[in-house]
Each structure stands twice: as structure tokens, then as C-alpha cells.
Length: 394
Image (cartoon, rainbow, N blue to C red):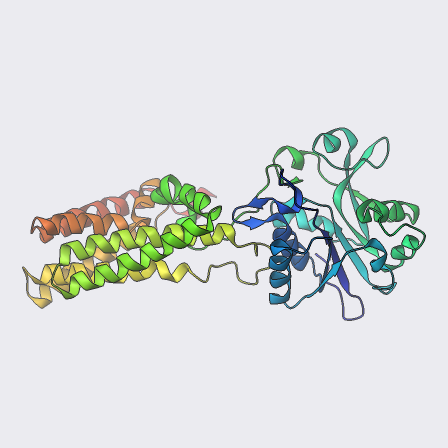
């Protein structure tokens, strides 16, 4: 992916249509963020240091895009009329033009921009069926192109109310900017679209994103639901904090079993909130570090649960026995979750351990809880050992 040098500036031109009853284009919300914000993210990943937004309606979406661009250190400018583009670039600069609603699904799609200038194309029939603008008898514009700054000079004779994207496309064809086809199968699998199906993949935040049982069954669907509803996501975050404080308070009042159960609830709510933040964060491609800054929060309830288990065991055993049993149980559970066997995915969810200990603790059977947890973890470790080492499978 080419990054502009200090002598050449890359400018991204995005657009935002007027609000309408039928929300679409760059106004559509996907995974808690607008398509416009996701285009800003793609433009930043492609090396744009300036973001120009062509719109006549400055509203909250434009402001959100501006904040995202400026947070990444890019200049942001509103373009209300197409002729404002004239004189804004030097001939050696590059203009990245993204069509209204265009969205890539992964970094592989951005690799098509590694040779610039370029106009990306699609076969006319599947492209037109997906809503892309037709260029000629054989091709549609694929919704994205990088043009040399000199192309803007051809806009001088056009009206002030010109459709900027189409005008630039015509100017690019007249000046014979090289064209490059987008693989047709990308349309079918959603890697390249006008936001009809495509949602950029959320960043991997922790090991749970690889497919633990709770992650696949509960947390991923819940994260998608909350990602589209910021208020409910905020409520889940507040509930996680309240449960965490409640768990700590219960431990302080010597209510160890309820405290461990509250820690399990806090952990589940925290992971759901973190999943929602990953879905709603538009910085998928331009983020330097793909890890979530919130991922560490999911381990706080685990600490409360471990303390609750320790204090619960202390009611029946001495400190030496308590420390040994608590460390051995938690250690075995963690080791079982590191394996590659499908059964190991259960141990990636530590909430099961806290629920088991909390329920047994309510009955005063802390030893039964750690014995059952240790046996399950050892079974998981043995199943992992059945998988031959990778070197033997070569």
C-alpha cells in the first residue's frame, strides 16, 4: 500500500448526501459507526493526510467524521461546491476519491491501491446490479480511484453544481488514468460493496474473539446488538461496573459466594460491553495497534473472583492449603484454555469457574467446587495432549 512522500500529499475526497427518510449511502450506520466514518478510516489507512468532505449539510455525522480525522492528525475541510476543489492541490499531489457508500471488508481490498494513479473497475453487469456507476459498455466504476492532482484542472469548465464523483471519473478517463479490475467474486462474498452487506471486521481484542464457547453463543451476538445501540451499550458498561463494585462489597462483608457470583456477572457484562466497543469503533484499518484499549478491563472481575475463591476456601482450610488449592485450580483452568482442542474453548471463559465456585459456595461446599473444576481442567489438558504436535503433521 503506497504511502505518500513528503513531496506528494494524498487528499481523500468523500461525500455526504442530504438527509432523507430512507437512510443510505454514507449516512448508514453499520456496527455502531457511520459508513462515512469507516471511509475516513480507510482513507487514513491509505495514507491520506487531508480529508475533504463534499456536503451541503453540516450535521452530526460530518462532525463525527471531522473528529475522527483530526484525532488521527489529518486536516479536515468541508467542500460545499465542486469548484472549490480547484486550486486546492498541486499537480504532483494525489486525490483519493471514494464513492458515496463504498466500503471494503478487509485490508486485502485496500491492497488494490498499491499502484497509483488508478481507477478501479468492475464488469458492467454484476457491478450495475450492485449499484455501481456504469462507465462504458463493459465496465462500471468500482467506487474508488486515486487521481493525479493535474486531473482537477479539467473541472474548471464545469458548473458549480456538478456531481463531483462523476465529473472526476470522466476527467480520469479523458486523461487516460490506468484502470484496474476488482475481482468479480469480491462482490459475491461482500468484500467490496456499496454498504449493502459489508461490515468491516472488528479488531481482535483478546483470545475470546477466536471463538470461545460463550463468545460464539452469547457475546458476539450481544456485541453486534449493542454495537448498533450506543445507549444500551453504555448501560451494559455501567451494569458491569456496578456488579464489580457489588462483588467487592460482598467480599468485604464476608459474603464470599454471592461476591464470586457477582464477579461472574460483572465479567460477562464487561465482555459484552468490550465487544460492542470493538464493533462500533470505525478505526479498523488505520489503527496502529489492533488491540482494544478496553480489553484489560475484562480481567478485573477475574481478580475479584479469585479473591472471593481464596477467602471462601479460607473459611474451611488453613492459609497454606487455601493458597495451594486456589492457585492450582486457577492455574489448571488457564492451562486447559490454552490448548487447541475444541473442548478447550470452554476454559477460555473463566465465568464458568466463578459460577461453579459461587453456587457450591452457597451450599458451603467450596472444596467440591475446586475439585470439580480441577478435574474438568485436567480432562481438558489431557484432550489437548491427544493432538499431535504441529511438526508431526507436516
